Length: 415
Image (tube, rainbow, N blue to C red):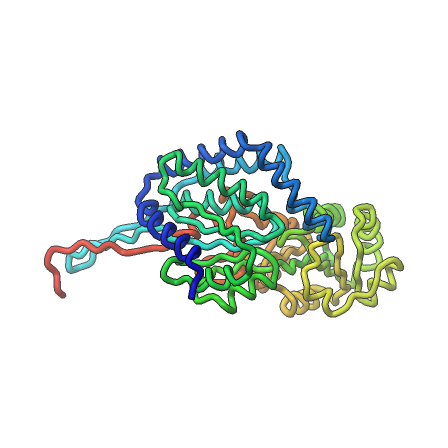
């Protein structure tokens, strides 16, 4: 038996989806502008709620990098508000398509339509509440949000503010709903609510994602954990390699596109490791290295098998010296979660081989893995980074929140 309150949420979402699917681009943009303004008007209340979440997280000993992900400020609220205006400026994919005529006269129109009701299950980043709602609304979808308990107070205020703004603009009630119950059984029931929910998108750590993928009966778009690698090739330009590594590891270590493992060509290890090691130490990054790395860097601690497998999501970097490109490819093939991988090299042939042979959503040459992001790719806000191969892959923007249907025009044809 499902919780009656959850069935009520599902009913409201389904009714709202029926109307929202046909809502004009102008009306959806108006709602997004109302939402952006409401965030700024309610900044004080949002920050008060967020301070409660941050204090609770610090009191329970949550990792510093995860606490930083949780924090909001006047600047970040302004940025979230601005991201809504950026979504307004994006092209609405609903209604896009093509038309062709068959030899028997049938005219077939392929057109993009919303998915319907999207259930978004995510962890401790309150900005996701707004990003997910914005992308879902612009693409004609209703969203049911279920954030992590760490950001509950922030999410309550954010969801209420944007939902009220969307409804005040003229969108149907129930277009944005937040589940505030922290009981995990609510998630278990939500991901089996097939009569009301069209797709589930989990966004967070490996445990959350696997729980949803394993237990859901509703179709899932799997966003992946980010065991992101950088291979520093023998032909790398050190002046490029150092800032790329430092950016990928330290700009925001608690996110899925942050660097977790650095692989170094054995031909340059003695020269490059002391150089990058010094810069990593300045950023207070702990290095966990293979035996060769520990020989070169006395301050590195030995890496365990887990260090090649699990996301650190912290100022910790696993480092391994490998026998050239083949060694790097072998390591990445074994441990990659198929999120983002990069090679630092001036050798065109090696770069092309890396691009072709690495199986990941995003593969880079001489650039940071931190670019795997909807905004950086020009998609506006993103709803997640998909590491699966069906229905979407990579940063998921508006187009990835639609599907297609065929409208067929005839004149009595039967053959």
